[in-house]
Image (cartoon, rainbow, N blue to C red; front, side, top):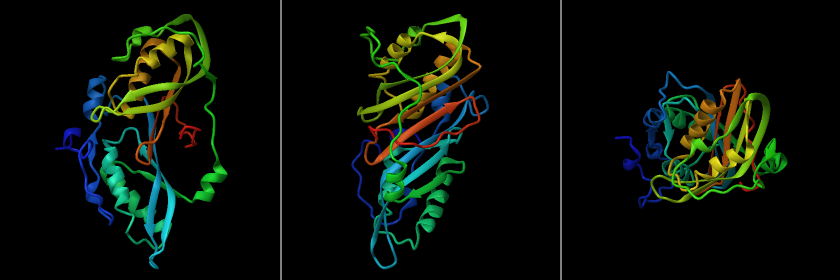
Length: 275
């Protein structure tokens, strides 16, 4: 039984501090894909889900603890997502577990996460010094957050708000920091920044902002929100290419950053100021 109702999300959980891969809980993507009219064979995008863990720690053979930052790249077409609370519980189970090197830990993480996701997951274990050197980044393109809009309905995404001029073909990159949705199980807010980059019919930036704000009370996981945005824009713009990705604020030491695109490139996983 791998539906979210059977996951540890929203339930009281014991803190287990020794290696316990059985804590990982897969949730099939197929159910949400079906809601969007998709299947594994008909996905109109490629991409990756970047997860960043800021509470990664383990013990050396001497008993001395190590802290680091974990980066996990999960293919967007993997059969399963990994339920976020189970992911956190699994990572916590490393806290009192012994690994001789960061490389040894990375190999275990890749094995366990790939088995749960159903496709190879790439793991990077970064030292704090590495993270400092890489620093923060800013989103590309034009920020649309200062545009004047009026909106009062936040219950569900409203693709009808998207307005474009099909007589004008443009290439542009727009971003907003006003994306918010809610966890479908706990109801807790998920805050994010989103980028839309495409070549196609000229999209009215104010209409994009109103559409993104309409997600404010929508209940869905990060990955499905980005996929819904991608599909609504693809239908409206009929673009030559389209990329949609979001950088979400972390909860419980993890942030989740879905990237969906018709292009072949996979972006660098660069942290924003709110992350």
